[in-house]
Image 1 (cartoon, rainbow, N blue to C red):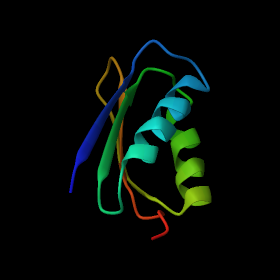
Image 2: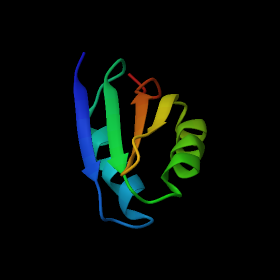
Image 3: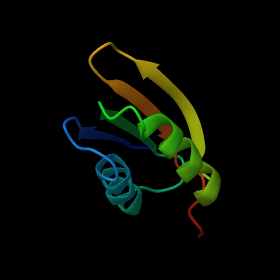
Image 4: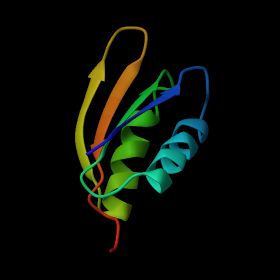
Length: 78
C-alpha cells in the first residue's frame, strides 16, 4: 500500500482535482492520496469526485494555511 502526497498549494480550481486525478492514475486500490491545497473549493470538489469515482473520502483537515484531504483508492477496476 502506497501513499501519494500531492501538493496543490497555489493552484485554483480545477488545478487541485487535476493533480488528484494524476495521482489516482498511478495508484492502486488500497493506496492513500493526501492532497494539500489552499483553494477553499477543494473539499467539496474532492467529496464529489470520490462519490462519482467510488473512492473513499477519508478526511479533511484545515491546517490554517491549507486544507489536507485524505482519500483511499477503492474505485479502480481490476
